[in-house]
Image (cartoon, rainbow, N blue to C red):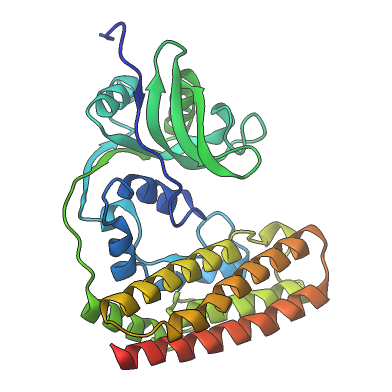
Length: 328
């Protein structure tokens, strides 16, 4: 039975650190409610993987991402899971009850086609994710955080009816996802310098692997250069080009710079390393923009230039992070 005259709900929304993929972004939005969320990222969001599917033109799954950064990786997030195959007839009631108790609702498995404002609305069927951040009951709208029709990650309103239809469409295909009611507690998180040093060492020293395995650490970014070579030779077709990969790299370097600055302050070091690292963040943004230019206008000279810049970025980052490890 539905409750009439519900009060509207609007949970806090800040743009998260990582927005390349919905699963990282949703976790980040909720995590921002803990004042020490950044410290969690500095302690943990170091390790990276690059999946072998990227070299085969798989654009559905994340090609390169954090190994730790999802909702279930964060111990300060309280989580309740509901398989969509069990809640077909009470989905709206569960969402509304969760929102009223201060929980966001992360949806894993919704058909964009039915959700107004999402990337593939009325264009094609695509199973994707989103985060419900609130509800406007008079207008029968949910506030969701997701990529919009212009491929921008933001919060916007969409009809409750469309959200339910998108969930049912996936369930009707026998592809069941999950609703995750998630909220942040005030658990204190402290900067862990020994842990950061260990994670940086793993990031720098993980050995290279076979093409059919996940490339880890700094080798994940080296694999991007291999990927560019496959694009240049035509082994990766236009349909297999993943436009997200260098967006993620830029986000990773921004977080790394903030981590270095925080470690320098905590250990009472000079800002020499962070000052030297800052241009690498700008360089990663430049590479990101060059890659988007290539995606719009195919030009092998652009690929060659990106590969040169990538080598500089990886070599310089490795040198600076080793220097940091020696000082902490």
